[in-house]
Length: 449
Image (tube, rainbow, N blue to C red):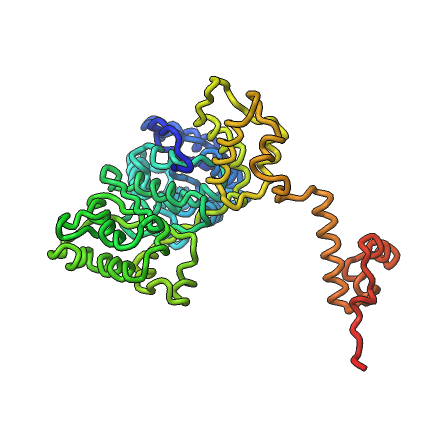
């Protein structure tokens, strides 16, 4: 079951974020780029540029170096934190060797001196987009991931960078977070996108069939899943579930780019990009002797961690609406959730992550007697005690009590000292202690008899 499947977006032009505090130059820059059918968003300062990273999702940033409040280098450094892999071209009217060195050392893709020749600018823009792995001016590569979360966008930036090479990738994360969707996105953004995408569900292999399914046999000509992925991508889903004996053969195959001789008698070469996923800590399994260290090194050239749903809760309403679109209601109703039901889902615990959310939405859609799914229906599928977020007042009270406990522990129950640290007078501090039923005597050290 695809966790994030949706219709592919139409092809779009590359998006360029143009930044310059000179209105005339910003307008000229925008005109030149738009003349080549680029989608351009002009902004006048670095702070506005950062605010647009998640909304506009640029494929390239072209920015002036010398700007008030935040210069181009500071903007570049912040972009590298928020969107690793996003290329930045720096422009300046004060071209100099020190500026060029500073820009290059900071990670700029290129450094151009104003006034920039139009063709020189366009050449650098095309090179930057090509190096960044912009997938044939098409967003279809990420069409399987529904999000508006900065943390997911950052991981998608890592995925697009990974797609630009054939390096092996290890995708980690809890069950149900969408690791296979990320693997599929990397394949779709890569030069192997027209080749096969083969997903080997390692947990589903049983008994002696494991090696046959994965590597093939002499009788089958070695046509196992590894060979079936030739020219494309092989996804080893939950690779930690492979037995150690199979791990050994897989490590040899990956190291030699050749199937083991005993699998087909010839040691056939294979050409597949390998992506592994794991919900387990493979390094911990290596320490326990449950996973081969050499295989971990072979798989972990690049690593992407897919966060839990709790870390991108802002996506829950979007995902709920998306999953409802996938539901075929037998009565032909257009289903939706009541506002308080959406509020409940957005604050519930999701140990099964996105997969669990999709299951709940489908259950709710099947059980609702009306087109509007109520909070009660939602609760029946998730559970009454599922709320993960306390109210603001409860959270504030819990924080205050924990803070007071820490102060009393630090001061050994000395109220005067604790009140000074909290910058409160003794009377107010005693009131706080009484309200939270805390006694200073419980924190005073007692000498042994």
